[in-house]
Length: 498
Image 1 (spheres, rainbow, N blue to C red):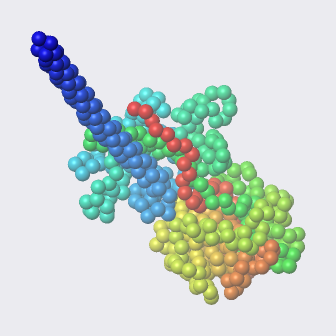
Image 2 (cartoon, rainbow, N blue to C red):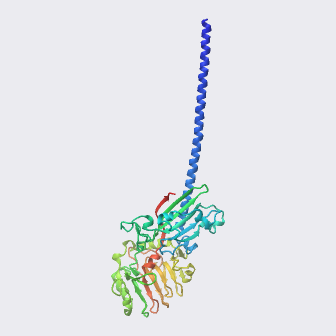
Image 3 (tube, rainbow, N blue to C red):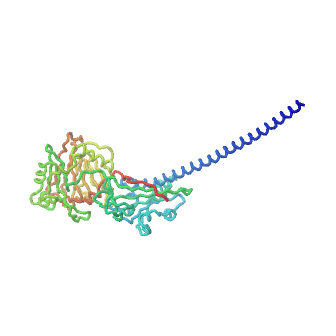
């Protein structure tokens, strides 16, 4: 009887154990299922996050590419510059872009039409900055991106997916910042950059431009990015006079004006780009020693000394050493400046390394450059430049490292630097002039070696008695227009929420 009861208890225990094992197995299966489902969900979430990241990263860099293309093409030295590939798209270098002038770089996809881009992808941000209806009343110009021009458009290379990049001027009001410290960000005058601050005064530096880019991906992702940028000018020596001649106590400057030409004069009375006096006065001739001051005055025919006007009484020749930067008063320092200009030049003639004896370039080499009041260039001549009988006009900055032979049948509007051999001469006829400023400095000997020590060599400007021409007229307007730039500096960068 006992054996039978014990057997029944053992049988019940086994059945109970079997029930518990089943429950545990079911629980484990449920747990594994939950973990598996969680892993699947997690994997899907991670895939979605990765996809979103790829999309946001792709559209970000697509918009950034639009900003960078527009910024790069603002430089005249860029082979695809707007000046070269889209004349009239923007004002000429040095000319202010007016508030209300809007320029778009369009980048349609393979199946899109450029004329429809701004309709398909409207620019709503401009009115946010300038007020409702501003874009409708703006003067709009357009050009295609480099991806929609030869040769890239024929290579079947997929380009960045930005749709448009806009370039426009900015003001206190559009940026909502108080630039003139009058307590109200209300001015609609274009802004300029002095190297550290914004200003309403165009005399302090180059204009600030706004570049905005919209990118759109096929999945609908969009991104709007924006730069404020301004050209970074190469720091040139201050043009304290219409003509500046280097020299030292050991190596004096030499100057001889055309004795038979009573109309030749050097004037420091500032003129605008149209030749009208501004009321500002600079030196006629600046030198570095008192001895050179006397030497230059002696080189001016007495009957016309009264025509050399400017800041002081005529003949206005003065020692500029106290006001001239000490960092540019040695041969190595001024020569380094010339090399910096050469590195950012639009044109270098002849190309390649400098060789001595220096080759001579004639005016015919300047003709194909197409210089004009709307196409100012930085031209570097790695040799002597002789423009005798060249009847064209020049615009921009001209740097000659050898001897410069001037012909008054040419008007040069801008800056002329003769740094290296520091020699200028001329003997021809016709009556034109140099508008802007001219600096002549000797930093190297005839073999091309840098002058030793800290003293600049004596510059030489020797015109024949019979040479005609009106001389040099100071023009801060042409000087500012001719300032060379190394690049467009990014002053601010931000993403605009949509």
